Image 1 (cartoon, rainbow, N blue to C red):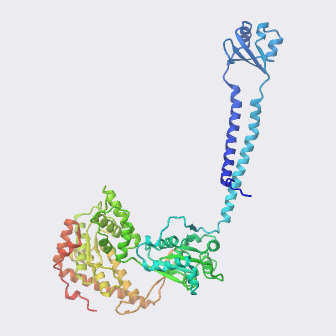
Image 2 (image 1 turned 135 degrees about the horizontal axis):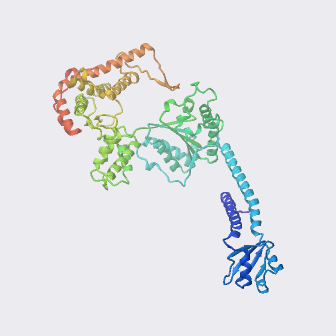
Image 3 (image 1 turned 90 degrees about the horizontal axis):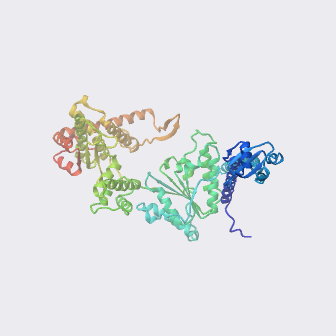
Amino acid sequence: MAMKNRPPKNKINNWMRLSVFWAIIVLAALAFFAVVAPNQQLEDVPISKVIERANSGKIEKIEGSGNELQITPEGEEEPTQRSYIQGGVSTLIKDNILNDDAKKTVADTPPSQTGETLWNLAIIIVPVVLIIGFFMFMMRQAQGQNNQALGFGKSKAKLYGIDKEKVVFNDIAGNDSAKQDLEEVVDFLKHPKKYKEVGAKIPKGVLLVGNPGTGKTMLARAVAGEANVPFFSISGSEFVEMFVGVGASRVRDLFQKAKKNAPAIIFIDEIDAVGRRRGSGMGGGHDEREQTLNQILVEMDGFETDTNVIILAATNRADVLDPALLRPGRFDRRTNIMLPERKDREAILKVHFKNKPVDDSVDLDKLAAKTAGSSGADLANIANEAAIIAARDNRKKITNADLTEAFEKVAIGPERKAKVMSEKEKELTAYHEAGHAVVGHVLPDNDPVHKVTIIPRGGTGGVTWFLPPQDKSYTSIYEFKDQLASALGGRIAEKLLYGEDGITTGAGSDLRKATEIARDMVIEQGMGTKLRDQVFHENNGGMLFDRMTHERPYSDETAKEIDEEVESLIKEAARRAELVLKANKESLEKLAKRLLVEETLDEDTVQQLLSDTKLPKEAKLYA
C-alpha cells in the first residue's frame, strides 16, 4: 500500500513539540484568568449604606454569591460596587431588612466554581505536561547520543554526485601528462568492456604527487566531473581518532559504500596522514594509524577483486609513505604533478583573468616569464591580488602595474613603507643591496638582476631580486657557486664600507641561504671536492620528545668532512665576491647612491648603471 502523502518524521516531531508548547501556554493563560478575573476592581461599600440605598430605590440590582454582594447602582448596567454580609442575600430577605420593592432587586446566584476548577486542573495538568516534556527531551538527547555512538565508526566521506557543479579537464590549464593518465581512468569507468576485451586492467589506485598548490585536488574534482560516477572524497586525517579501531572501521565503511555504488571513485586527500611508513615502534602494533593503514591495504588489494572501485590519493610527501601502499596492485600508477612551465603558466593566468576586466597594457606572457617556479595556486593568488589592488585604487580595469605589484607582493612580501630607518641604516641597506646586485651582475652564471630596492619588504630590510631568463630543469656547479657569491655580496659590501668591525645582522638571511645551498651541493648533489659524486641523503626519522630525529647514513668522520666542504665553499664564495666588489668599487658606489635617491631600481636601470663592470681574472671558475 502506497504512502506517498505520509509526512516526514521530522515534521511530525516538530508538530508534536509545537502542540505541547501551545497547550502549556493555553493552560497557563486559563489558570491566570481564573485567578485574576474574579478579582476585578469593584468599590467596597458598607452593607448599611447598601440597605439604605436599596430601600430608597437607588439600586438597580443586588446579586449574591456566598457572603459577597455585587451591587449595580441606579443607571448602571454592570456591577460597580461590592459589599459583604453573613449569610448573603438570604439574610437580607429573611430578616425583612429590605422593603418589598427593594427585595425585588435581589437575585441569589450560586457561587461560581469555574475559576476554582480551572485552577485545580492547572495545578494537576501543568506539572504533568512539564514532566512529560522533560522526559521526552531527555529521551531524544539519549537517542541522539546513541546515534552518535553507533555512527562513530562510520565514514565521514562526502559524496559528490552528478547533480553538483562540475569541474572538467577543459577547465584546468597545464598538467597535460597528468590529465592524460587520469583520462584513462575516466575512460575505463565509462567503457570498461573495451579494456576487458583485450585483457587490460585499469590501475586500482592512482597516486597524485606534487608540491602544494600544483592542482592535485583540482584534478581529482575534474575526474569526478568527467567520470559521471559516484565520487567519495575524504581527508586522511578524518580516519584517525583517539580510539583504536575507529579509523579501520571507517575505512571498511567507506569501501563498502563505494562497492555498493560501483563503479565509483574514492579520493583520499593528504594520504600521508595515515599512510606513513610502519615499523617506527613508537605506537606499537596496536597504533591507531597503523591499524587504519593495514585496513586500507587489505581493502585495496585483498581477496576480493574486480570491485570496479578506483582509489585516487594526493600527497606532497610521497617519500614518507609505506612501501606496501606504493606497490603495484595498490597504487599501480604514480602521477607527478609538476610545477607549470612557461606556456602552462600563461594558460593558467588566462583562466584566472578570464572573468576579470583587464587593460590593454596587460601582458600575461611577460608575467608568465617572470613567475618561474610558481604553482597554480600562486598564480591564482597573483590574479586575485591584482584585482584587489585595482579595486583599492578605484579603477575599473586591471593594469600591468597592478600585475607587477601583485607579483612582487606574493613573491617577496608587501612593502613596509611605514618602517622608519635612519640615514645610516638607509646607507647601509643601499650598499648591502648594491653588493648583491654587482656580484650577481658580474658573475657569468648567475641569474640577471630583476629589481633592487631598499624599501623593506616582508621580513627583509631590502631586496635584490634575481630572476632566470627562462625555465631551467638543471643547475650546474658554476651556477651554484655564483649564487653563493652573490648571496654573500651584501656582507662583503658592508665589510668594504665599514671594515671588519662594521658588519651587521643585516646579512642573517643571506648567510642562512648560502649555508643551505652549500650543504645541498655537498650532501644531495655530490658537488664537494673531497666527497665528489657521493650523496649523503638525510631522512627525517620522526618526532621524539618534541624533537625531530634524523637518520644519518654516514659516520662522524664523514660529517666532519661535510662541514669542512661547506666551509670551503662559503670561503671561496666570499673571496670571489670580495674580488668582484674591489674591482668594481666605482659601480658599487654609483648604484648605492642611486638607490639612496630613488629607493627602487628596475632591471633596465641596473643594467645601465653596471654597464662598465668587469669580471676579475681571479674570480673566474676553471674547475
